[in-house]
Image 1 (spheres, helix red, strand yellow):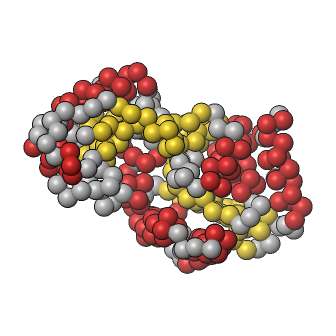
Image 2 (cartoon, helix red, strand yellow; image 1 turned 180 degrees about the vertical axis):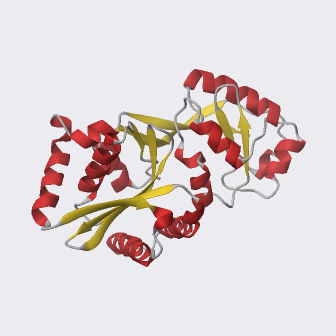
Amino acid sequence: MIINGDEYELLLKNMDIIPTSDFLPTTINFWNNANQVQIFKLENAILLVLFNPPFGDAFSHLLVNNLTDNLIAIASQKTKELNIAKLKISYSQSDCKQVFINDLLPETDEFEYIYNLSDLALLQGSKYKKQRNAYAKAIKENSELTIEISDLASINDKIEIKQFCQDCMQIKSDRNHANEPNLQREWLAFQKCIDLSSGLNLKIMKLYANQKLSGLLIYEEFNKEWIVGHFFKTYLGLGMYLLNQLSIALSEQGFKYFNFQEDRGVESLRYFKQQLNPAFHLKTYSIAL
């Protein structure tokens, strides 16, 4: 059954599956709007067919050549085995005459980080020693740390948020001595998030250090147990403090899990997310046409 975006979001929120950040309607709007997307309801999961990179005739080729049934059959079987609903289509123009879809292949370097919010709130045990030290250092080096949580749509003047994010990205660009394409994509996605926020159910936690905006995390309450992080920016040294305060606040509201999305191949980000001791990784799987 083909469903639209609103039906997809409602189905996901009421199904006992892991929310996959890349396939949430919000994320598609920010990052993947140029790709052609089709959504199918399977027996026990949702399949979002995403062409990446997009080719002009890829979607019509899939339908014209009756590959949809084969795709759904494979996806239905694999999601039963893997309890996962994050599947991507890999497509190239040289494959135009191919009739059958091959097997499901794991993407070894692409996965999302899933955390127990209670772990990040308590920071207990030797595995969180570095994080406790970072938390203590943030308090010691800043005379005043305050947290604000609000609906992103309720913030009328978003200039402060955009400027802060732009400053963070400029610092990263200067540190790497390059204007990375990924930073440009992220900046465009962030601006789109801010501009579209009036129609989206997004939250923002802002961290002020010494009365200056010094960190933010834009996130989505997926259902009563899960949140998905979309954008996370802090000045050096304040990331752990922000994550801890967010985890405490959300744990008190009954949330259990935090999907911190992929690291998109950025080594420093991968190191940071691994050091936070994820409960598990949500792997990405692709189907090759």
